[in-house]
Image (cartoon, rainbow, N blue to C red; front, side, top):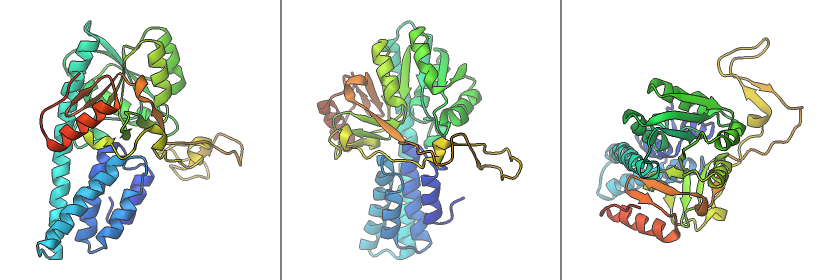
Length: 339
């Protein structure tokens, strides 16, 4: 439990709290927490907004709650009332995220029916994009759950998602709870699945989508997009419009977070204590002093993305004009865009 903003920032940085939509909610609730405890809200906002630099939703949630807090103060609210306004805004954002999740699932299911009319979908997913990262059922995994409930999911292929195993630890857990037919695989086994014709579609989430449609997502996503294009398999990104970032012109402008090297050189065994070690410590698998390249994300260019599914519709093909139109529609709240 996070009782102050520094604890929440550490939870975000350590990935105890992770996933684009959930980071937005954490940012908003973090501002409400800071206000309720009498801390400097603007200082808390600065700290929270930069806890995970690639994930645009985090800063979005922070801005929403801060704006509500200051608006209340301008209307002569006292500190307690301003804190209540920030909390109310966080709860609105929470509700909006749950509703967005439901609409993304519906749009994504329709898209898959159009792309794969034969049904019996075999879907490959990477990282974790379900209820554990959302106010609702998630993004890409929400689509998978909708397909599963419709009786159209033949198999969910779950990438383990090195180095922190979000697929093995989280997506497999959610798939099992939902009663899906799923199979876990090592990340580097995906190519053999494509070559064998065992993948009908790839579904991913996103942490930031640039103005040109470039998509930053968990590292390992870009190689899957390349494999999907070579094997003529749809590569679909599912993300709320809050993940769109028109201020970032293209993929090269996306700041990619670099994670600590020990996540690669060590393997963490969460609950099994080893002799002389506490539970949850890392077990080295590389020689002492080994340097590690450990980006949290990679960037997939728009030409490799078949479609982007949002709560306000689907963009396909993925172009800068399509992103701009969807952004304008989502800000005005008028209508939906479809393929």
